[in-house]
Image (cartoon, rainbow, N blue to C red; front, side):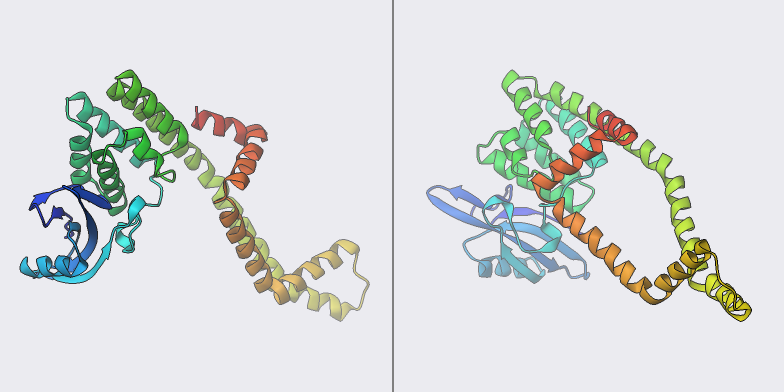
Amino acid sequence: MHGRDAWCIRCGAVRAPAARRRTGEACVPAFAYQALDPSGNTRRGVLQADTARAVRGVLRERGLNPLSVEEVREGGATAPAGLSWRRGLGTAQLALLTRQLATLLGAGLPIDEALGALAEQADNERQRATVVALRARVSEGASLAGALREFPDAFPDLYCATVGAGEQSGHLAGVLDRLADHAEASDALRQKVLAALAYPLLLTLVAIAVVAGLLGWVVPQIIAVFDNLQQALPWPTRVLVALSALVRHWGWLLLLLVAGLALAARLALRREAWRERWHATLLRLPLVGRVERAANT
């Protein structure tokens, strides 16, 4: 079982783990830790203290064996992999998070308390860390839209702009409800598209495997028969023989080339300029363009 908490050593109260929290005139750092409890379970959390040594001392006083203690830097960056919130949220996670936040705000809870409740109920570490970081920024005085914009991998620009409009109009709960409806509809459409593409994709993979097997093992045996006949082969057969030789001798190189192209494409799509070109190309395609528009409108 995993545990997580956020505790200020100076004041002895549970607080949001901001990178730096002001206590009077002092700026108190926050430290993300991983520790083992007496049962051998891993516990993760954030403590505010002057030094990492002080955090280790508090953990030992609680009967925990500290594994790692590292400062949470400005902007939410922290070294432990289990606490990284620089990755995106899935469409379903975003829809659920938005719906829960809308419900809590509609019930009259302040934003920081609503985010704290969502952090406690989060299903996974990525979502928990994202919500904890959002609460920290809101507690420091940032607007919810401004806090969301610091996590572009998790919250799209349109989402942040809509939240900002809801804050300015004073109808944030209603706006979040509509955003949740949109996210749920987009996720449902995405699931339908994936289900519709699953069978053709499976057939394509099976076809590629069958063709590779024919060229790599069956065709060479047929070639031996033609060699014994010592007759000139027609050009379609010669093309087939050449393809078979290519697969047998250079198949590994083709696999490496495909893997390299896939990796290069993934790295290129991380850049905004290439990503915009890719999306523009998708929108111009006859069938894919309509699906993309339906999923994002």
